[in-house]
Image 1 (cartoon, rainbow, N blue to C red):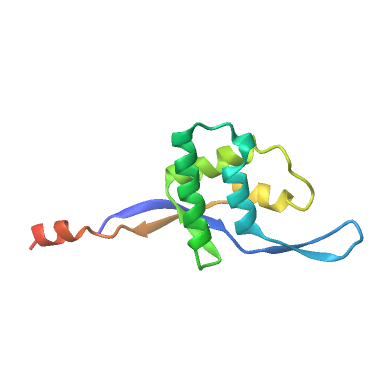
Image 2 (cartoon, rainbow, N blue to C red):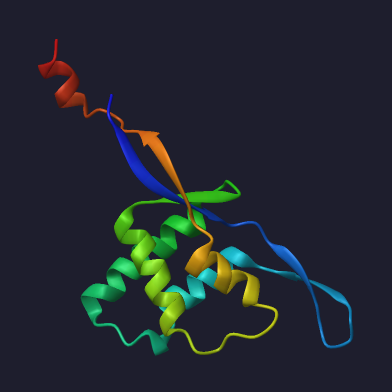
Length: 119
């Protein structure tokens, strides 16, 4: 089996202090989905479909992280760069999206047709 490069994005929620110094929960998945599909992204219809597909993948993820291919990683980074409404509460998310994705190697799943051809 061959190895493929992927990037691991942390989806765990985190705590932040609000203006009254009360601990609040920051919803990471929900926020990434909003950023990917925000009107301010200024993307065309075809690109929006790609963003929305990635948003669906993130929403469906049951783990505390998600593995992204190179194109998805770029989409996340570009969305974070274009987004204009960052604040102190979302700063940690900004860091994750721009600088916090860890490169990992994963084994590629072999296509069923490839397996049959190799018999």
